Length: 163
Image (tube, rainbow, N blue to C red; front, side):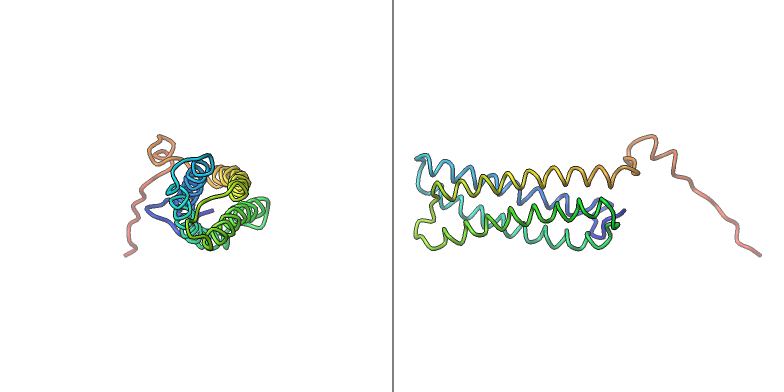
């Protein structure tokens, strides 16, 4: 199975997934330091990092939905749907946390928001596991371009034109 969205032969969605995941983790770390007594500006940094993660997650969801069209209707499709649902659930929980924080002037984190973010990251961890399973399934038949196996399978055929 090949992804519809590719850059130089590599699927885009696995590349995009790293951005929201990293930003969500960073936002949670900033919020943790805000809750345990760090400088107050770290809460606002955590809020804006969460907003950036939501934008990146929206782009990732679009790429995932486009790729979902080509997934065969078997166990791989169920895994792909579960992967996208886990990522959407994580993003949804962070969206609620950001909306709650948008009402406060400092946009700092609270213990309840931090707990919600930690639960969202746990759900995202399930998504990472499912994404790794998908990559193993998709790459099962492929060989790396730099390996000798890839060279053995590539041939050049010269066909004479009919006269």
